[in-house]
Image 1 (tube, rainbow, N blue to C red):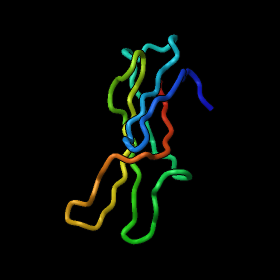
Image 2 (image 1 turned 30 degrees about the horizontal axis):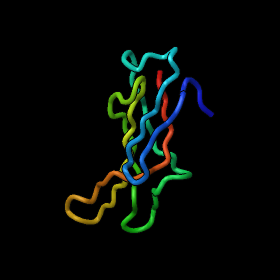
Image 3 (image 1 turned 90 degrees about the horizontal axis):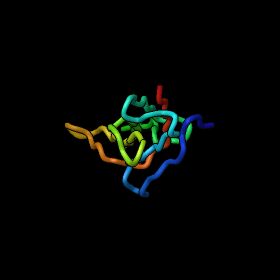
Image 4 (image 1 turned 180 degrees about the horizontal axis):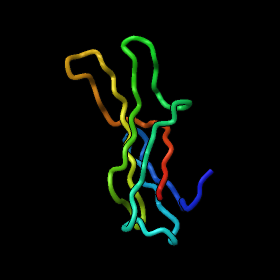
Length: 93
């Protein structure tokens, strides 16, 4: 379900999404809260485990908010974090 979202654009494999808002919501006057969708993302509880991450990354497009998604794979001293296509929820107040 969406409310006040006009379109979402995304290039496969980038983990970067532009959520264009309805013209009644000015992107310049708001921000977004993004959260991974556990039911559909790559998060796993096995060893070493994989974690999906989603975050608001500023504005995009004509009247949009950008959401970046990542896959985090622990196991090395710093782990491995990279942009990845992940399912997410977004709320724009």
